[in-house]
Length: 305
Image 1 (tube, rainbow, N blue to C red):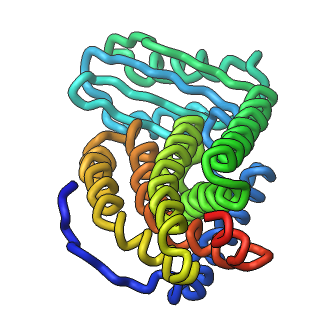
Image 2: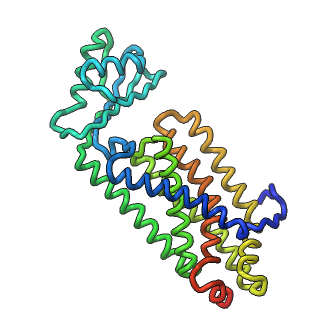
Image 3: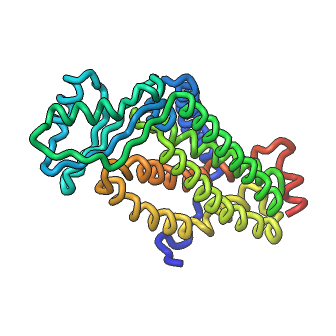
């Protein structure tokens, strides 16, 4: 493994209170975001809020401002329009709480056919999701996240012990809430693709946490007399270069995807980018300190090392 930091001796546990304050703010934002999502007050995509997505192809370009004006004139205001300039395509998303029987997609196609009669129009894809289905997708997404956390606790508890499992689950939940909070503050759209990114970053965060925990466990077996905080600090410092190199490798891939990957991939890659950064932070400043403040103190952990 490339050594970019060399041998470090940073007192991470001595800074845990500062980290807890920062994490508390991030978690509070995440909880607020979850409450708003549950109320339907957040910026939900059509996957969760219900709506219509139509992809159209023209024989000649149609600019985004022209398309928006055409929809406004036909009482279809508030649409999200994505332009694929090189292929003369438009992706139109319209959030709606109306029933599928209204066929909003047909109204969109009819509006473009009337407004751009001089251009050949082809419907490449059309999707309509009713509010009932959107609500069901919200529930399914929440269940998927909860199942993943239960799996994390069971896996870590089996590999290490229960307190490690809880610490890893809390750390991962912290990461998901932090990313959700940032998305809410930035008014980013929450879609199924973003939920997929959250589950992906949960797996990444867990992997990073396991590496740190594994080194801590090794040190517990051979350095019990050093004290728990010293053992944890040493463990983190020993894997710090590995952790940073791994995270930087992922970040170097995600940055160009976020900046130049297009609208479809932007929010997905942004969620992953934020998740990798927060996940690396939480493995050090959330998961590990929880081992120190666990009820009952350090005695039992040092004894079992």
